[in-house]
Image: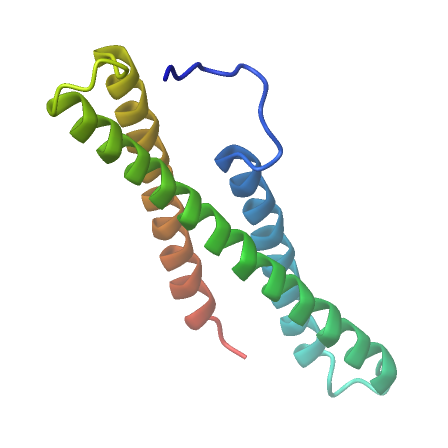
Length: 137
């Protein structure tokens, strides 16, 4: 069993998932700024119809659901990479001749990098939560 490094990014890769999450976070940030603007304009006689606001709420709920699914998929991918690395390391330690040291090292580095990326995403989410919770309505 040999692991190879792909230069092409697969559609389910962590990088693609992180980029998708970043797009969704930007959308949520813009939506929250729009909500602040609507709250400030609430006293103005020109108000948007209720139907449009309901459509926007439904769209943002759908986006939040897809964000949660993307986040879950990313964390599952990190978990799978760590499990694969641990499995390869155990097989190598027990003397399995089909597993080379380079296979173990590559799997370990992949899992380490994906874990560090997940930690950075977590840190950004915490920072975004703190920013949103400190916003005045």
